[in-house]
Image: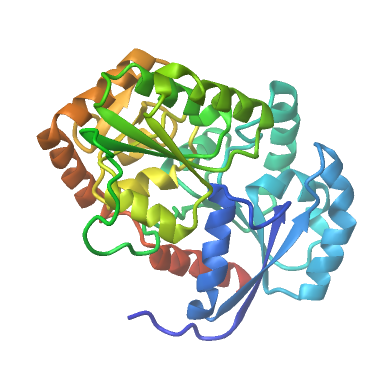
Length: 357
C-alpha cells in the first residue's frame, strides 16, 4: 500500500499543443495527472501553440505568464516543448525537470529541423535540475550527447484498463489467428509494412485488427487507405480507429499476436502492454523493442525493412499455436518486471518532489 505524500506538491507541465492528443508521450502525462492526487500532488498543463516550427517560440511570454499564475513548486518540461522554452529557461524561478520521450531533435522531423531543434533541446536540458527519460534506449542516447549526470529512467506503465475474464469477441473470424496492430498512422510506425506482410499470408490464415489515429499525417493516411482498398487485403483487415483504454485492453485480451514494425520507438508502450497481456510481439529489431523483447524468447524480431521476413514471422506464429503460447507466456513473465502506472507515478512524483526541495 502506498504512503501518503508528506505535503501537497504543485506541478506545472509544459507541453506543445493539445494534451489530449493520442500519442505515447501525451498519454504518459495524462495518466500521471490522473494519478497525481494519490501521491499528494496536482499536475496542470501549460501548452505552447502547435504552430509550425519554429513559431511556437513566440508563445514563450504567454507560457511564462501561465507558469507564474499556476505558482508551481516544480515545472516539468515535456521533450516536445523543450526547444521552445530553452531561450527563457534562466528566467524561470522554480526548479525545472525535463521528461523526455524522444532524443534531442525529435524523431519525426527532417534533417534541417532536427539539427536546429537539437541545439535548442540540448540548451534546455543543460539547465534542468533532473533529466527523466522514458527508456534505457533514451538514457544511452542522452549519455552519448554528454548529458549523463542528471538522468533517471522513468518508463511508462505496462498496464491498461483491466479486461478481465474470457474472450468476449471472436477476432479470428474464421482465421487461425488474430493479429493486432496499434499505432498512429505515421510512416515510422510501419503500418504499410504490416499491410504488405498480411497480404502475403495464405488466405484464411490470419485476420489483422488495426487501431490508431489516422489524423497525424494525412498524406501517409491516404496511402494506408489506398493500400487497404486493394483486392489482396479484402476480408483480411478490420480497422478500429482510435481507442479508449478499455477498448484497447479488450483487443489485447482477445488477440493472438501483436505486431508493430516501428523503425524509431523511444519506448513502445504498446509492446509492453501486449506482453503484459500475454501476447508474443513482432516488429523490427530497432528502437526500444530489443530492450523489451528478445528474439525467439518473447517475440520475433525482424531486420528493419524486411517485409518478407515480417510475413514469415507472422505466418510462423499464426500456424504454430504452441510457439505463440510459449512466447506469449515468456513475454508475460518478462513484463511483470516492467512498472505499473502506479509505480511509474510514484517514481515520477518522487523525482519532482526531490527537485522541488
